[in-house]
Length: 128
Image (cartoon, rainbow, N blue to C red):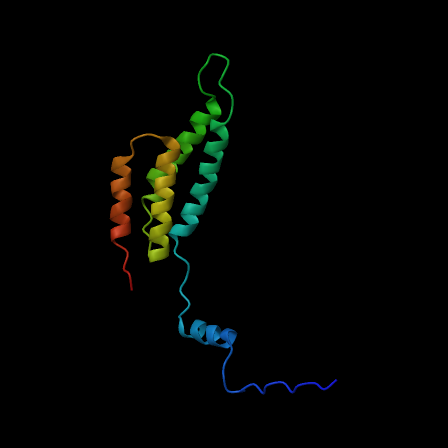
């Protein structure tokens, strides 16, 4: 059985991996947006709040104390370190917007004044 010869590959054509590495080399390394660490801490508080909301009601029919404490901690985080930190990149601005919307949905209370402050922080981000 005769084997057909393989097509010779052009050695000068770069692979997709080579092209990707070349493109990555052109992009300057930027430090991560500091707001991402603040949001990461807030996500932990958000998870604790969701967990506390899943607890059964207290014997007197009210919500458990753990839920009140978790909600207060989440609101304190939203109003203090989060709104005092400005995103410095578009990625940070998007993450802040998503986080703020998630907190608003979770708590189900009117946070319109806080959301306006979030929009102000996002509006300050330079796109380039």
